[in-house]
Length: 329
Ligand code: SAM
Ligand code: SF4
Image (cartoon, rainbow, N blue to C red; front, side, top):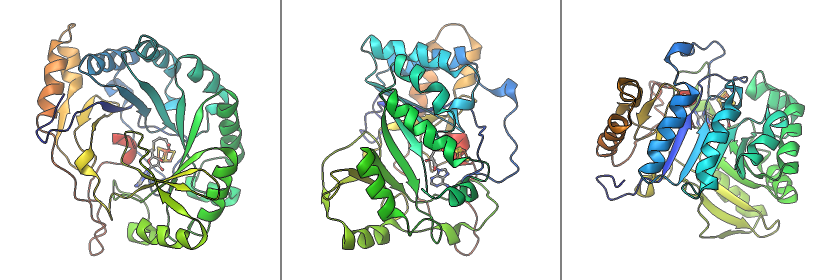
């Protein structure tokens, strides 16, 4: 699948639920209205849809949410999608998770073909962790990370840079990830969805963070890419990889290779734009996959050149009204 700007679309992120057992302050309001269950794609529909993407040349699938591991019976879907990996049609099946359920599921994930997980962890301080996630339990997540490692999963830690909250912790985080053998990616906050607080207060440009880190660490540019928008450096002192995702200070759209599908089967061709394609209607209109295939291709033919996020200081309105937990981060 090639989009109008010549980019090959080989990566799909699929949100399997918009629900979550955490309420991270930058992601959700404490009181959220979730999609009624009847509107969700069933696990069978998700499997069918993923199969069509694979037929169309998608090589990597990432399951996300909300918290993907709170979707009931998710392991069934992982097992089905794992077939595409085992039979060589898919290069990679991964997952982005808050880690709360990894203790329970790490072994199955590995057994069904997952080799790498991204775990979101913004702080190593238990009290701060509980303040940021509102409902999260730090010990549970650490135990989950340990279980993932024991199961043989490679781990990348995703850390959202929050001004005045965790900006004093990046050195510690780099050292810890270095010791543990985890990659680390720092992410700028993106203005998506209504939250309870003020986003301009959370926003911390990573250009500033990087300049500060360079006073303490030797950061060497490397070519490593995971198919995502992160730019990586090697931290000479730890040997670990450190990525930066900077949607606001640096536009990463030129090399965009992905689309996103929500848990209700809406495909967004760009994280930062409203245009979408309804794949659920196509899935439910007939048993065959021709309509789904056509709906995907028509969507890709409209994939925009890029997003244009701004944290609007005057209005403090989200640039995109839907939450990250809807589109899937
Ligand atoms: N619940 C899972 C988790 O937290 O890893 C998967 C979904 S979560 C929406 C995916 C990623 O998006 C997480 O790393 C989270 O920190 C990040 N995220 C959520 N809201 C964000 C925002 N407004 N700006 C930047 N990153 C955000
Ligand atoms: Fe849940 Fe992930 Fe959003 Fe936190 S970032 S509220 S864990 S979906």
